[in-house]
Image 1 (cartoon, rainbow, N blue to C red):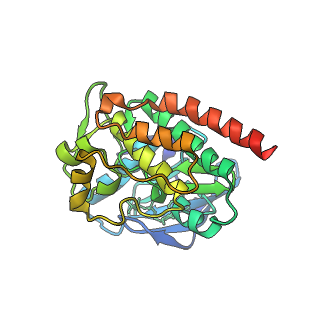
Image 2 (cartoon, rainbow, N blue to C red):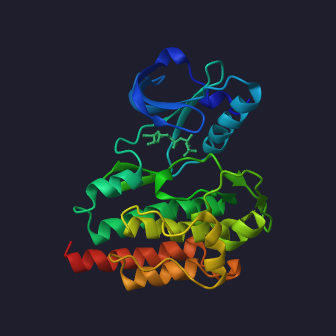
Image 3 (cartoon, protein in one colour):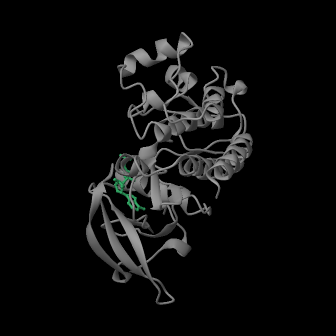
Length: 280
Ligand code: ATP
């Protein structure tokens, strides 16, 4: 089984509510979970429409990765039901996907809030970096909003553990080309350094209020542009200091990119300065 005893929960303790959206494996619902201490917790319930053993195992592997993670900016796994129909139960993030939230709130969000979101996602990724885990799908569609001041990294569907100096060689075709580092596009090579590239693209999305990166190109044209040294342009709202970090994340050579640890330091500094300028 994908999960140990600790995360096995009983279906009798879960009340399913309305549909939140469609996931890769099936519908995602909201609901309420009654914990062993009697506490009622708002949850998101992921379901799997395919009943074959193979697909169920893939579906549950995301929970298998998430059960070992404990970070304030990573969506928390509450439990798993491993008997049919299999469910993954996670903490509910009331405000949904960051991408949609940015579009809805674009006239309200200020500069220090945007940098706060970048910093929080970066802290989550620095934590994964410390565990030698690559995420492989860092984008605003995979960040969820808990409150106006708190976002969390969700969706570990593509994540993998990698040994140091090693990398995960992907075979899947459902790849987010416009977010990917050149070595990921060319050789399907995914490392913490390629996650850093993707995080740069995710920050670009945040400052562009969730526009699609390279929306003016076809997937097949992206690698040529990158090889020519072309990069995503500075979004209007993006401070030059932040754009300089983005371009650093988009160094062609993986070794030329900063680590998530370094990015946390730089983003913290920028965040502090923004707050001072806003007089908070
Ligand atoms: P994909 O791989 O295509 O991204 P998925 O199977 O990972 O799909 P999600 O994108 O995570 O599924 O979830 C589908 C929908 O459910 C999303 O629109 C998201 O807004 C919502 N959702 C997922 N998890 C949560 C959560 N913990 N809290 C609130 N909403 C959630």
